[in-house]
Image (tube, rainbow over all chains, first blue to last red; front, side, top):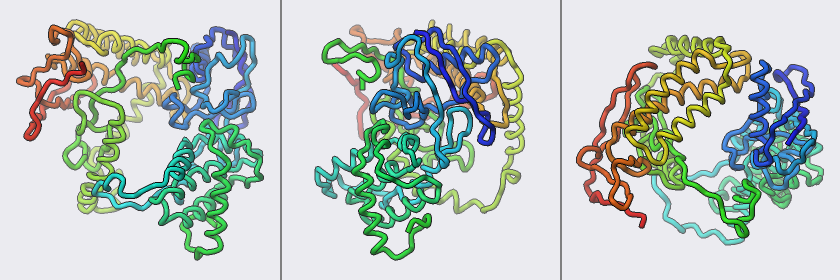
Length: 257
Length: 258
């Protein structure tokens, strides 16, 4: 396959960026998108051009590192698939593919396709934890969890924190990510002690980081490689509303309360 | 998951699978408090060697991460912290300045070679050597061949690698070059370790040491220990320390997957 790539190049967070066009002439349909990028980078190095920076780690679709917008869609055209699991067989010989970084004010570009997603870490720090005693292993099955709650918590826990929801949202909102974390912990008995404080703190931190608000667009869930449902957002809003009405203002993070 | 990777439906077409090495079966040496030979550097989870046997099965990472994180480190790190005076910066730590200088020099060297071969090409060549000689099945002959080949590749790496860009900004080629430089040392160490262990054990299958029906043949008389290798310098052969394995409650037996 012969592919023409239009790739966003940006030397650093404050530098001006631009699209560069590269040809990839020996692309096999079996290559993953990232493997194709590796080949392009090898060509660039041979020509003395700095390779395109992009994030990647496990290349198994579970770490959430890879992040790029391919032809306008975060993680590309294949549904429920991370960029690393997208293969060139999803494209055609002669295609021109446009590759950009995730664009959001809260995700500053570090270089080329690599963006700083540490805002997500700070949202997690604000409330993405449960208080449990360390030291001894708890007895198995000592805390019963209803099946439907376990299932929903597991669905929410699928979130790999890649940020595609933010990149897909016209408001660059991080509601789906935050809601997935709030729901995953808030549905389980282990997550009850901090349930309402968590909703306040994580939403507060999310606002503080400069993510936009939710206008029920729903594109986040469409772009999500783990197909996290928008029901998590409704659930988080319910917790947040209840917390706002009943909890004293003692949350640890943000001014969301 | 399989269909996502291969584009083939395993209900219709036979799955294409093959065995491969997926783990090094070891890690950094730590004491019983999970502290490494560097005071204050604690190593948790599968980055340390402590809970590993010669084999690694699925979920080992979760097991060791949870065990070290829940049951060990909450009790041991406090003792270390209680003995350290706060506020001692890098200047107060013996050897810190020398290490900073060493890393700076190494970075400068990597960027200044400006040769004709990419980092990935070295990574691939090393990977091929390891795949051929230190993979699922190893032999003394193959391991010796690898130990002969790797130092040459390492020398070529340091004389003809091409790392573009600067050291003061985000530079993924430079990061990768540092990793591959480490792999070039680590790969050789793995071969040395595999060569000295004249037995088959877990993920280490030496073709010379097998039962008539092709199962791994251990030698508990000679090799019932963990080998901890001490770094002596880039070009010097590491020194082996043995930590005996002692089994009080469980008798050593042969595991058969048949």
